[in-house]
Length: 63
Length: 211
Image (cartoon, rainbow over all chains, first blue to last red; front, top):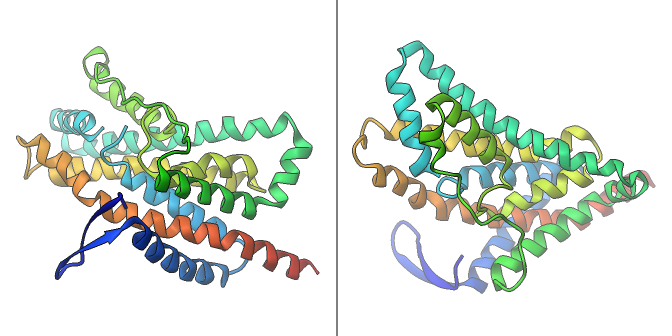
């Protein structure tokens, strides 16, 4: 997600810009949001909890 | 962080009898989760200062969460918007100043709280926002608690799983964390985008259900 870098797709290395990365994340996020809200209004809270869990796991090298 | 705590966990685990290893790991996991819950309780207690405003905020919680997620994403994208954090790591001298078990518990509390150390994970900021605006106490405390639990769990996983293979290669163990960070960061971007989209939609759905 940094300015410009490489993303390992598994089969090849592709270069992406931040805008492209955000577009992909936004598209995927929109789908995830619709699925979550399919379970009701409280779906947004499940998204928040999931995001915080991933944040904790991602803090492996920080702090 | 892992460079500080992994040797401590391994050292404590190695010195104890086999049966107590899970207890040590469990104590670190619990202390970290407790650190997260404690600061969430303190932040949530601030609602008592202006209860009327707190109630108003809770009514528009999805929008506030959406706005917070968008702000953090924009701040990370541009690098020009402030994101509050205490830009310090856990004090390494605790390893020598305190007994191993006490140091582990202290590290757990501080790391679980999150606000006392450097924050790399963008989704962390949803925890404090949720603690203030959530309509129920459970929803207010849960995000911060799972952040703290996840943070401790990954340290213990690296310490335990990585230790036998890389006992003398601490940098390799630390590298494991950095190697997997891009995937987890990408997942956070997706989930933060999802929260920012879901906020307005949840408000519309809520109003339709109430009508």
